[in-house]
Length: 296
Image 1 (cartoon, rainbow, N blue to C red):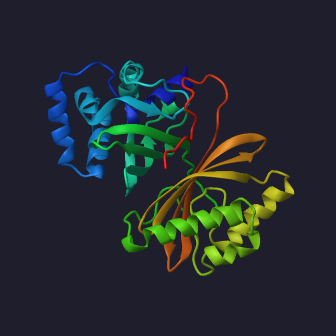
Image 2: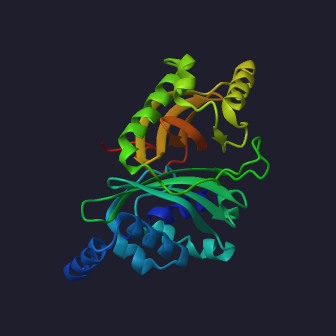
C-alpha cells in the first residue's frame, strides 16, 4: 500500500483528467496556456498539484497524457483518489531547479513530509513534455531518499540553480553525451580529464567525495566489491545553457537501473554533478510505457 501511495503521489507531477470537455472550455484553456511560457505552464501545474486544485490541473494538461512512472496508470482519476492521503501527511514538492529544452521542462525537486513515498524527504528529477498547444502531455521521473550526511559535505540539491551560457547549450549537451559514452559506458575511460575539471568538481552524489580524486576513489571501491555500475544506453540528453541532464539505462547490483545525471559546465569541462539512481521495476506495473521511450 505504501508503494502504491508513493507512486500515485508522484503522479501529481503529471495528473490529468480523462473526462470530456466542452469545445468552448478547450478553447479558453488553449488561450490561457499560449500566453504563458513553458516553465510557467509547468510551474502553474505543479502549484495546482500542491494545492490539490483539480480544476487547474485539468486546464493545464491533456486527457491523453503518457505516463512513464511504471506504477501509475494513465489518467488523473487514480491520483485524485489518493489526494486526501497526501493532504493528511502534508506531502508536497519543493522545486530546486527548473530548466527548459524545446518542449521539455526538466526539474530537480525535494519532496517534503514524504512518508507516503517511503522516507521523510526524497529527491527527484522530473521531466514534463508539453505538446504543440502548450499542454502537459508526458511525464518521466526518478526518486531517491534524501541523505543528511554525505561524503562531500554537500547536499544532494544545493549549488547553483540558474542557467548561464545559453549560447553553449548544444555544445554542452554534446560534451555530456560524449562524457557518458566514454567514461560511464566505458568506451574511452582514460579520457576522464577531457571532460571533468581537475580544479573543481563539486559532487552531490551522497557516497562520493569532491573532485577527480573522489570519483576515482569511489570507482576503485566499487570495483573492489565487484559491484561497479555500467551504463548501457543513453535515452535522453536535455540542456539549458551550462546545465545538462542525461537519462541513461544501466546495470548495478545485478539489477537494471535508470540513471539521471545533471551536470554543470564551465569552459568546456564538467564542474558539478547531481544524480538520482533508481532500480527499474519489473513487477506490479500499472502501464507498459517503460521508464524511457523518449521522442526525438
